[in-house]
Amino acid sequence: MRFYSTNNPQKTVTSEQALFQSMPFDKGLYMPSPLPILRPDFFNTIASQSLADIGFEISKALFGAEISKTDLEELTHNAFPFDTPLVDLQPGQTGVLELFHGPSLAFKDVGARYMAALMSYYLKISDKEVHILVATSGDTGGAVAMGFHNVPGIRVSILYPSGRISDLQEKQLTTLGGNVQAFEVEGSFDDCQAIVKEAFTDDELNAQIPLSSANSINIFRLIPQGFYYVRAYGQARKFGKSIVFSTPSGNFGNLTAGVMVQKMGLPVEHFIASTNLNDIVPKYLETGNYLPRPSVATISNAMDVGTPSNFTRLSYLYNNDYKHFKENISGYFFSDDETRIGIKQIYNRYNYVACPHTAIGLMGLEAYSKKSSHDYFGVALATAHPSKFKLLVEEVIGQSVDVPERLAILAEKEKYSVKIPANYEAFKDSLLQTVA
Image (cartoon, rainbow, N blue to C red):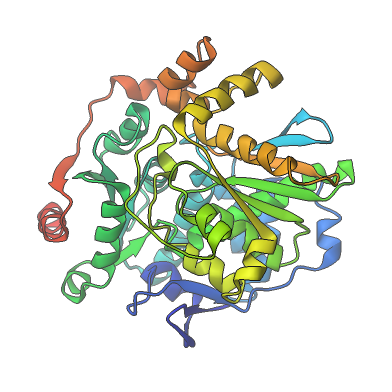
C-alpha cells in the first residue's frame, strides 16, 4: 500500500515511510492509496471474531505481501490482548461500544498499541531508533505513554495543556519515566498540536532527532481505530438492522477511521459527529463554512480542539464534496450543563455510568433520532472509563465510581514534567536538552 500527501497526491511513499515520517514535509497529511475493498462475505462471518482477529484480517488486506501473514498475526494479537465489547442499553435499539478495556482505559489504546507493535517490527529489521512526539488533549498521552513505554529503540515526548486534563490523565503520562518524557505546556491543546506540527517541518531538528508521531496526524494511529467499528458491526448484526455510529469527536481522527472502513466496504448507514462547545464541524455541516477558532475548555476535555487536523482527511474521503459530506455525517454539540444532565439521565435510564465524552456520544444519537423516522441500531462509542473523570461523574450521579487498580495506583505516584510556555523555540530548546 502506498500513501500520498493531501498537499501533493501525485507523490507517494511506502507504508514504512508514512509510519515513521508521520507528516509530509509539505505540511499535508498522509492518505492511503488506494484503500483496499474488503470482500462482502468477510462482514458476514465476523460475529464471533475478536478485535485482534478482525485487525489481522484487515491488516492482511492493507499490507498485502509487505509483511508476512505470520508476522502480522503475531503483531495484531500482541497489540490487542483486550476486546471492545458492545453493551446493549436498549436491545435492538441502542448500544455503547466500550473502547476502554486497554491499559490506559481509553479508546486510544487501540491505535497506540498497534503503532507501537508496527514500529517495533520495522525497527528490529532496520536496527534504527525513533523519537515519538505527540500532543494530547487528554487520553492520547496516557495511551501513547503506556503503549510505547520501554519499547526498544523508541523515546517518547508528550505535550499536554497545563491544567486542562484530569488528574488521573496527567498521572498516566507523567509518572512512567524511562523512555517517556512529559512537557506541560502553558496553553491549549491547539498550542501543543501547533508545536508538534512545526517540529516535523523543522529541518534542523529533524537532522538531529529522527522524529515520528503517535497523534492522529499519523495515518497509522487512525487505521487500527477502524478495526473496532468492524468489531461493533459483527456484534450488532444479530439485530438485522442498519447501523448508525455516534462518535465523540475532537480532532476527528476517530470519525475519520470510521469513514475509512466504510469506504472499504463496512455497511454503515450514517455517522454522527458528537462534540462539545468546540463545534467547528457541526457548524460546517450547518453552514458549509469551515471556520476553525481557538479551543474552549470544557468538562469533556479530550474534545477541546478548535482546529481539528483530520477535517482535511474527512474532506478528501468525500472528494471535497460538501453535499456528500453532509449526506453521510450529522453533527451535534452540547454545553457542559447539557453534558452533566446527559450523564445523569443515562445513569437513571440505563443504570450505566458514562464519562462526559461517552455521554455526548449517546446524546448525539438521541438528537439524531428526533429527525430520523426509520428503524436502525444506534452505537455510541464509549471512549474512556468513567473513573478517569471520577470527581465529576460522582458529583453528577450521586454514586461512587470504582477506579480499576491499574489506574488507582497512579494516584500515589510522583508527577514529573517539564513546564514550558506555548512557544515552539522554548520546546525545541527543552527537547534538545532532554535528549542531549
